[in-house]
Length: 113
Length: 114
Image (cartoon, rainbow over all chains, first blue to last red; front, top):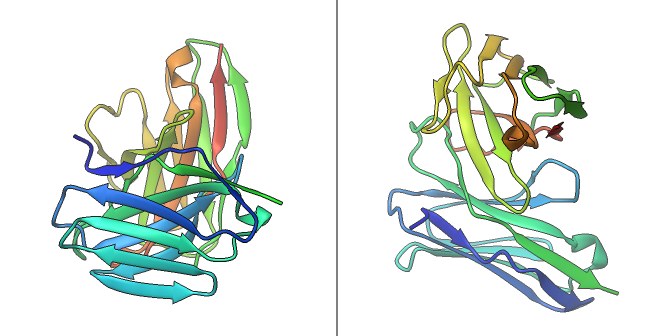
């Protein structure tokens, strides 16, 4: 079993839709949770970063972490064609773990105008 | 945040040869990492580049195949040695802090081995 599982999609939605992207994980030591966005032929860029459980909102994006279920989500409201990209969840353990990130497989999202 | 650049951006190489990829960060970072991303796959950590000492390799990756240097806090190189077609991939450099801050990625080097 992989430490981090993510549905690779592809996911296709119409413009304006609410998008829900999810990851599950098995390692209860994970405390830091990130979402990266990767456009075609580019490196991943950090989108959202959350510590422990709870919600974090940034504009149209909301990240949720449920540590009891080992489940994290990224919601995109009013999705735009410019949101079309691959979204990767990533997570790591405590502060002194050397910053090693474990990534999900990535979900390819396409927002149609 | 940190801005990371990589050279070359892409290359086509013959099997049996070696390629060195350079990674430059615009500010000093505590940690630097090298990842591989194969088509349709997630990022796999190759190694942590340690300043002034030998890199720390992940399971399945060895120094003879992927020698890494990190002479200072802003620069690192990854060499892919004795290449085979199975080494065709995107190689990504990443930098960040040792604390809870996230990592930032370079644009990647797209390698095709014939």
